[in-house]
Length: 526
Image (cartoon, rainbow, N blue to C red; front, side, top):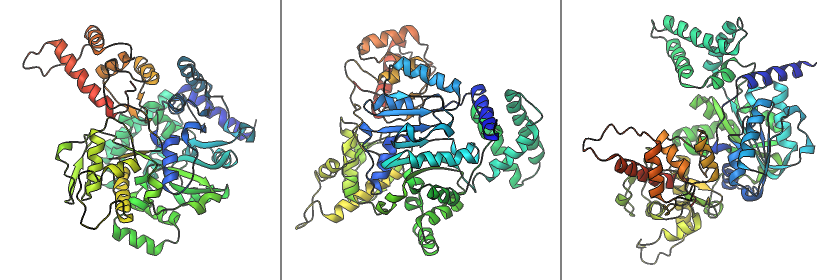
């Protein structure tokens, strides 16, 4: 048996023993990659009919909702753990999906016979495997990538991971005395608490570092803690080293999957000017950005090196016009938005906001607030944003200046997550029908106590009452029937009821408020 085979068997055993509790990652969805690629001048395959490979799919929480919502696309997920693959297959069978396969596979076995893919995704794998497997991930990302294809790889980065590696080294030293994985986790917690008890007597930087890792261990699931701190491999790298290695496999950096995590959008002018004066490439600037941010994690989008020449970092209306815009969260006081040229701050219920003095952008936000459509095409949104706005005499609408100003405003909203962008209309409703309906995917997740994923591939954290409500929204029942079922089956906590409002009225009020939230959360399909 080779050393690598032995290592892979150990990794397989650890993931079988402590199944990695995955989730949907919107930044790793083909939709997000398509938007990023299109913004920067590339021509990615439309997601409605594409082929997707996920390297390290775990139990399928990420790839299965993709396959459900993109029924005409083809999905392949590979993972080394048989236990995780079996769990994924059970879900696939339950949902009756025929456009997805999840073979158990050592990543070293993936070759050209697997075919070409328009999107290749690898979340939480690259830095947590031996170097030979890291190289294989890059090899797959190159040899199995279709023309105009895009790759997503997440990985740990320095300098931000430095203190994590320090804690990990201490934990590994201590836990090597124990063979049971559960015992190792308990001992890791005990060690950090022991060090904290000593370090907290001082006001040193070390005290705060240790406290941070104690907090991490108290607030995360054991499967994450084990695979992050105790697993055989956790090998962060500097961004520039990752990009240099990717380049040897014919891959080039496009941007981060979260657009606002790039130096292109986040740096203040004076810092940006300094970096522009000392950096000869965009990649070098990104490395300095990691130094400034103390970044510990990246989610990078890559393309074939041959496509690098097509990357344009000057985003124009032309690159944006065929996309769709949506509101990720409800806007606070939309009636107070004034479509004039005065600076105004607009915020949403997630406490995310933008400041704008652009009358077109403010009008666009008002339109999004009042539309019955979940998504509106950017070109239509731009045209409609002129409604009610008086133009200066002799000035025509739709000038290049207005288009670019509108583009800049939309981008400002997008990079702060105040506005969402998509390459297609998700098709969800901003109205509540007589017989409210969520997707079969959401029904399955609600009824099986799984994290619910909306049509935008976002995990939705809701309480037990809201989950029960979702589980009844199959499109076959009126709200009177749904409320009756809720009254029988739930025990909502209505402590604040000074007016002694009847229970059934409280349930109805709570359900109606939730339905109103579900609209913008992208949960209602009928």
